[in-house]
Length: 200
Image (cartoon, rainbow, N blue to C red; front, side, top):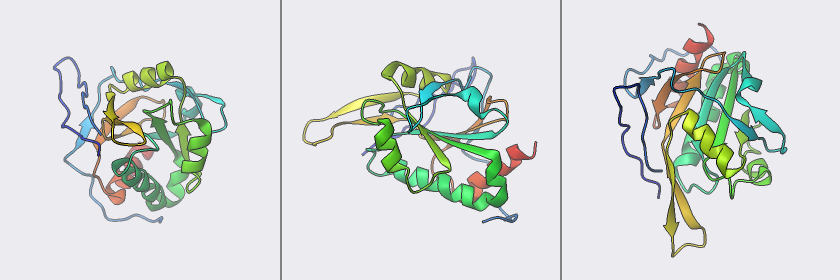
């Protein structure tokens, strides 16, 4: 099971160090807890590949609000739940969902091939899953100050799991990360945060 620890912040600028793993206008208040404003040191840059094997960069989503989540397809519990929250939040947005680019970035690129991502995300074509080389995946994590570490599982056929930070990131229309939201938020609350960014 993945372990998640609370984020630590450095005075130099909100570095997140975490080791571990509709429609209409719903009356849902913007959450006051677990929503972290990010500094410009979070660049949001990446150069990865999609499930078709095509190169995709952060610039390709400029003009849309981005919802970014890091995880892996072999995650037994936490990632599937959070991906479900992403999908449900898009449902909550209704027509506003067209203004959002929902992005999943793999922290396990060695196993998360384009074909693996195609199979895993067949349930919701609105989510764009991305993978790439080990180096490219590490660079993407660095752009979001997110830590991911392999943990051996000697008694499992999987061989290892990946402990990683559990956050939803919301980027503005220029691609700049604005907020990190600690996992565990409801779809309605996530939709409210996305709607706020859409209407800026």
